[in-house]
Image (tube, rainbow, N blue to C red; front, side, top):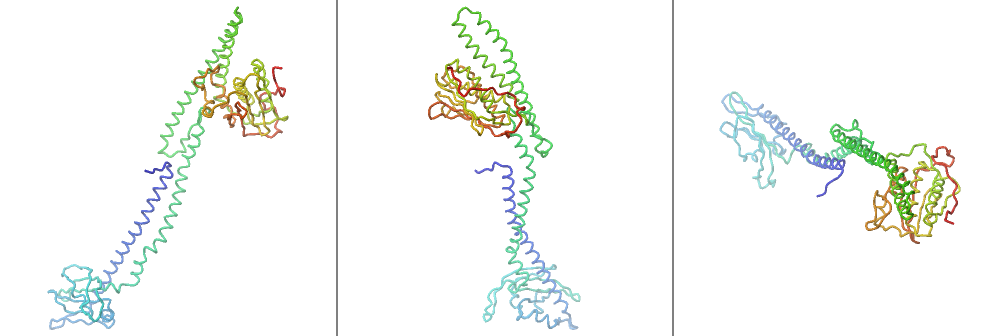
Length: 483
């Protein structure tokens, strides 16, 4: 069964159904009210006519009845007019007087009561020459008392000669009312949409704020005072859950930072003790392991620091200088592994709103990853395009498509492969780029190897003062190699 996911859509859909039902039932109700009003008018007219006829009825001295209707009333009740007819009945039901067209209505089955009676019927014309066929009538039998004697005046109306005005109103009611009801309900629907949009605006604002909440922004809380009273308990509960979540993140970050700081001293002591060993091969192996451990500790400290890292409004970084400094740092590592570093950057600064220290870490981590995977005697290329995109490419085995969205996760490694790192370097890169509102992606090169690309959005004009930059650039040769 189809279900609407949006509360706004549900409300509007229910209102459309309600308005549709109302647009059908309201004209029907009005129609029945109009019919009732027309019937009341009709009954009132019949009662009034019965009173008029009885007004001209009198008893003679000999006890017989006399009826002296004026000329205009005789015409009203005449057969030629054919609209109204009357009968005057005595207590036994006998006919005292009748209009010229009353022979049609005399076939109506009637009872004489002490209260006015109203009836409807279909009568057949007994005169074959008139060829009038059957006709629907409505009538009233009204008791009257004249000179102490009770009589009943029956007045009938032929519905084929109904009041033209009432007939037109009733017959064209739905057509006329439809043109009025439909626009009114459409206007009400438009007003409903505006009202519900305004009423749900605080929830939409809260949703936008909630979308900003993440590991890097655990301090965001949903506004309670703006919420409707019915929603406030839910919002308050969510904020309390966010408080607990932020506390958990803070404890985790503090533990990571404290553990990393505590490990630095034992590693430094261990490194000093290695230098005193007499076995050079053992010392070399141990020193390599300590280097890996030191690198992991450094990365843990970087992660702990980057958790609360934000780029300031006045922070500026020169991507050219960042790439040059990263290449200089990586050159030493490449020389140790008999690999090369190539640098291609513009001859002018490319300034962005960012933190140069954090960007240096990102480029350094990507470069270290490239050096680790590139083949011996090959070159890791660091390039910066004029539009501010940093690319780091290697000549390694590349990265399979199924792993490209996983390599930026913390502690992720390819199953079944021996790795020397902890799987933290690329996650640091992603965090730095998120803080700079940038992106990092990876693709395989056609010539072999992988290419990481860092792209930025918030560029600054080249006239900005470089005093906002956190790091100074160090001149670096275009090609750094072991020689």
